[in-house]
Image 1 (cartoon, rainbow, N blue to C red):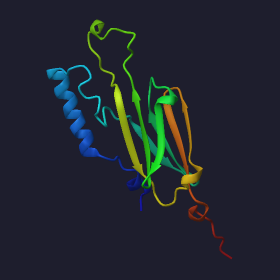
Image 2: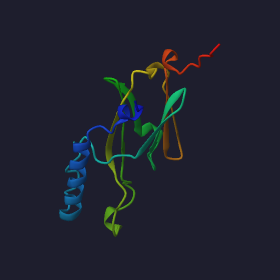
Image 3: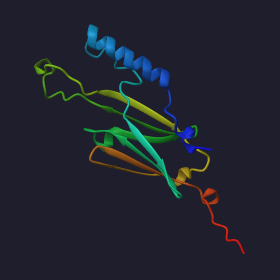
Length: 147
């Protein structure tokens, strides 16, 4: 059984809706601050891999400070959220176009029962968030010798 089913991307319809909203906003324009209450504004890309000892998640969060990123465990899910702000020092009117995403983000990954939630570690360097999700001792593969 693949463990990847546990690490599915949450809220795919919400993400699709937000992408469609973004397309219409780009086309029709948006009043300044109109969607400040929106839960999801953009979605960082993530990779998940597994080895014998742990699951490893890497998420791209370029241009963010670690203080603007929150990681929590909620209802057996690893939740990564935060906000990337548009620089207020630069005038938005001077840009010819803006392609990078700004605003709030939210990603949730369902944790398999084999993860030791108390031992999760996270690091952030050069715009990449790395989260190590160690497996519990009792579920780690053990070799049995044949006599």
